[in-house]
Image (cartoon, rainbow, N blue to C red; front, side, top):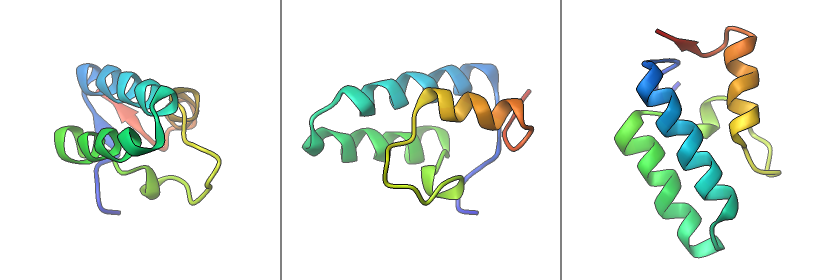
Length: 72
């Protein structure tokens, strides 16, 4: 695992917001937003999925619900 699996409530909200922005962004802007997830919050999508279908805020919430990601 490159990043973290435990986040503060504020970080979790930031992750959700950035994931929503990634899904709405043009292809060229998506990389910059994913970089912000990694650098600003320590969240690496690749730690939790290998799918190319696009990781969403709902996917993040599912990982929280299953205990894979913890919010403290």
